Length: 97
Image (tube, rainbow, N blue to C red; front, side, top):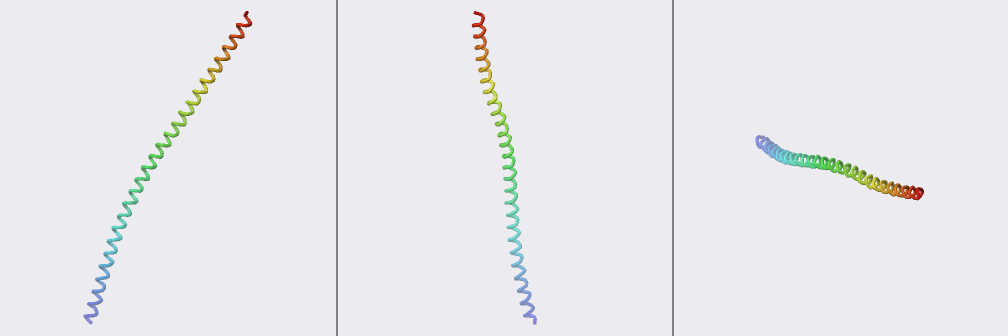
């Protein structure tokens, strides 16, 4: 009977060691996965910040483009107005003759 109980204890000890080994490996894998998750979260936040900065630059460029196009339109308008004034001056000069 002592042999049987020694055998059972030996098998139980062996299985407990195997279980502890599997548990240690799973803890290491879990730790590794947690580290990877933290790295990915850091990358995500970095990319999110970069996205916000790029969007702000995009908006600024859109505004600058609007002002550029308005400046061109203003210049064209001034040129047309100047041309009209010169034509009116010519007409007034012709009427004064």
